[in-house]
Length: 161
Image (cartoon, rainbow, N blue to C red):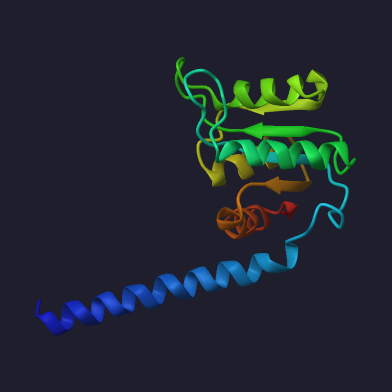
């Protein structure tokens, strides 16, 4: 392959990635909401992230938990679904998230745990098919929200974030 062909392929790849990203962002943007304007939904879905060996949530996960708790306290949903990685005995995002929430007053019966939310698609699919959620407030970081809402809505969830 010539240098010109490699450069052209690289440019085409960048344009394709940017185009797809723009499409996903445009499709998700109408469903971005603030805590005050968020509709009441079946559940709040907090997507997992790194948990330390001590069980403490990482600086990425803590703001997700805080925001999910604020939505719950504001009455935006009666249940919280925590979804994350619990693929081994020694790594458990889900119980750490549940423990964090219950330590702050969320009743245990209001927290559901998805131990197989290994990626965004799995979390959304399982929210719909295993936990029978129809309307959901997705909690994650801004950089991850467009993709999360796009996947949720592509799967038929009425999702906001």
